[in-house]
Image (cartoon, rainbow, N blue to C red; front, top):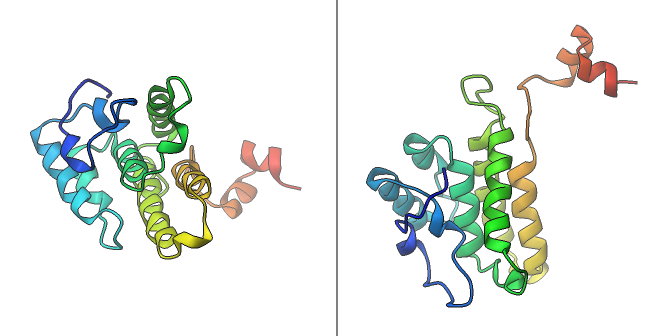
Amino acid sequence: HWGTSKALAAMSSPPSPKRPRVEESLEVDAKQAEAVKTFAKLAGSFASNVFCLEAVNPVSVLQLTASHTLRHRGLLEQFEGIPNFPQTLRTFLSKIEGLYLPRDDVPYHNGTHAADTLVTCDWMLHLDLDRFTALDRFAAIIACAIHDVAHDGRNNAFHVNTKSPLAITYND
């Protein structure tokens, strides 16, 4: 789902000539670009709505949300000196999103939930910027992106009661 489209270029400040934009190579069509613009207008506020992104691009909602949030908050500058960091981050986000089970299988603990958690955490962190370093905020955003990877939508009680392989492995 990564290509060479520059449809997201209007989302935030122009890129530094030294580094490519993380979201620059996301492939989006005109309808998706409009949803991204709508999301970008509300980014950083409690009114951020990842569901407008999911409606037009359910496969990449977490990638779009994470890359835009990191760029919008200026959290990528600290990694300028690391070779291939934008490409590595794109690959990482793509793989993480691919590990979330689809909404049809897991209606709640999916990539859209991770994206929603991410924007909510970003909003809360931004309320008290003096308390957190840029690295703290970057780590929190990534933690939100990965917090429910491969969640099967069932709780501990279900796994224990059904003696599922997860329960057998992790239950005392």
